[in-house]
Length: 280
Image: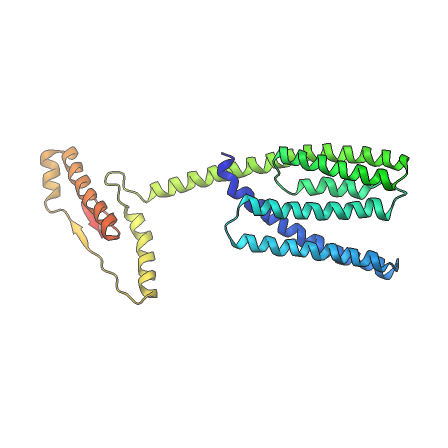
């Protein structure tokens, strides 16, 4: 059932990726004003704008793949680009900018980056291991030992917490998707059954009224006429009363079979609109 929701998962991740990249780029542009106007640090301002531009690039990439057939591979590439970008920025804020303090920003970014998407648990664990190893090596080289220990504790908490929260959120979202898909399937089934005649397999009167509007609008659009043929089985009531209803049903089924073949061969529409009345 999860594989049946793969398209919904892809669309969910693509939509989230597009929204988050747009929000992140706007926030980075706004926050870049502080190092420019208050701290007077041009390099920090340029780094903020560079990350914002990169996020906008991922946003454009996501919009591009959304116009095509959504597949898991391109969406995974977009997510990895976003994840790498946001983690690099978290490394910069938590390690380079503040080497004498704990990297709380890294912990927040690390958890949030996992919560917004549906990620396979195995790949999420691999990402966590890679990020923690890179982060620990950077902090060990740059920060004093006491802050490195604090950062390692924070990284471990963020890694474990992020995986747990991500799994829980993904489970809830997929469960909701499965429920919505099941309801949609049942609704489509009931809708199809409501316009089908059980005896002949043709459309019933409701189905005819639904389709006739479509054909009329289509023909008006291309300036063509609509031809409607009404058929009635002569002396059917006498035949049905004399031979019995089962024989009468066989006659109606035979007529329905002929019209069904006509629909398949000639691409026309046919329906049973009354007891022994047909229309095509």
